Figure 1 (cartoon, rainbow, N blue to C red):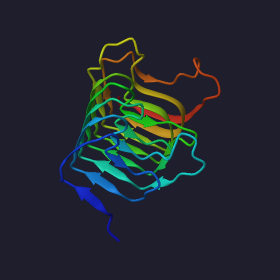
Figure 2: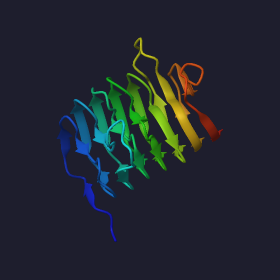
Figure 3: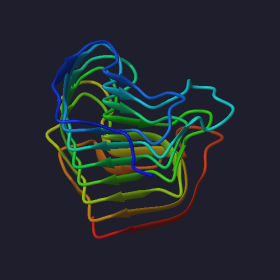
Length: 193
């Protein structure tokens, strides 16, 4: 069975360009998503979701820029099995490029080959279990009073960070366990970055 795809269509200019909450196995490919007042692509199902309601979605080969809201260019909170690959994400000033935290943070996420630059906050923020971050490039953060990190992950288990190139951030890979109580980091592989 093939995966539904919306591809190579047009430029999207709206509050939430794509809302995939409670939707499964959707592929967003080849779009320019810009000037959003909230998330560029929203896969979350709320901050305090009790179940993983989005599964197997793919966000690939998109240009996502000029995002100003609180959710991020890609909001993957509470998602399961998301593939975010080869996206160009820039000029995200209101929040993080990828927001992957939440009550049920992302799991089985693959973030590969994304190019993130000119960010107001972190590249990846939140928590993730059984995730793979590889070949992402993050650089040229906006110099503000905000604490900008390439990765800022508070809850993360059984995940791999490899072959990412990160520069021009406060900290490249940051686990704020000493700053925030109740979070955990376990069983990670970090190499080749």
